[in-house]
Structures are given as structure tokens and as C-alpha cells.
Length: 192
Image (cartoon, rainbow, N blue to C red):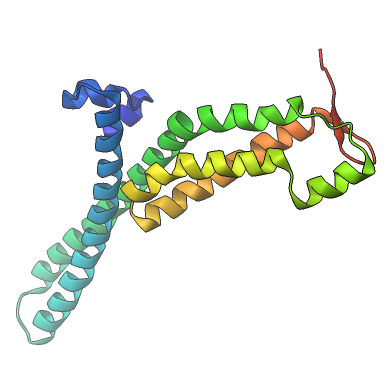
């Protein structure tokens, strides 16, 4: 997984793991993300348990100050390792967002420019209650994210949703700035 991230492609995972299909690679990538999260959490739990056990042992007079310093150093390394796993998870989610979500979302957002924005008062009221473009976007996003919802842990899925939401906000901002606004709706402007 780390090799795939360093090269910037999920598709490299197919070669690295000897996986033949893109779908298998995607599945393996999602499993790897889940495993990285679990490893990070398990390391944190291990650190807490070791610290607790060591405090009990050293309070009973077992071990020297030198042994205590060695154990403290090892426990500190566990914190670093857990942090590396968390960083790897963030990089993996960012890569997933960039390679699997962004290419889908950008055209959906860009389609906002192709929708007629020259509408009358009655249409405006109807769009306020039920905008077809917004409804279509919601359906597309739900379909896209359904696959990830069943494959990722709830924590990772929520983080991915957050990344996707930020992406949508940025893309919508870019798209809206390509529009001029009238009283009812914005109108697309061709820029040179």
C-alpha cells in the first residue's frame, strides 16, 4: 500500500500484489486501509497496557532505573509507530479521494453549468423545493459512496466523507464563480 501511495497510483497495487483485476486491487486497497486503522488503534492500546503493567511492576520494586528507561524508550517508539500508521491512513484516504472520487465528482459538479439558469419566478420556487440538478447529484454521490460504506470501517468512511465534502465545496465554488448571478439564478459565462 505504501509503495502505491509513494507512486501516486492505486493501480500500482495490482502489480505489487500480483492482482489481476482493477476491482480486486481496489478491494485490496480498502482492506489495507482498514488494516492500517486497526493496527494504529491496537498499537495505542498496547502502549496503554504496557505502561499500566510497567507502572505496577516498577512500583513493586521490580527492575532498575536503567530497565525502566529502556521500557520507556520502547513505549515511546510505539507512539511513533502508531503515528506513522495514522499518517499512512491519511495519505491512503487522500489518494483514494483523488483517484476514485474526484474523477467522478468533477464532471457532476461541472454539469451545473449546462443546466438552464434562465428561469421564471414559478420555476424558481419549484427549484427551491426540488432542484433536479441537486437531486441528481445526491443520487450519484450516494451510489458512489455505497461501495465504500460497506468496505470501510465507520471511522474511515466518515473521514472519506469529510474529504469528499471538502472536494465538493471546492469544485462548487469554482463552478459558481464561472457564473454570473441574476435575481433568479446564475447564468453561465464563457471565459477565455
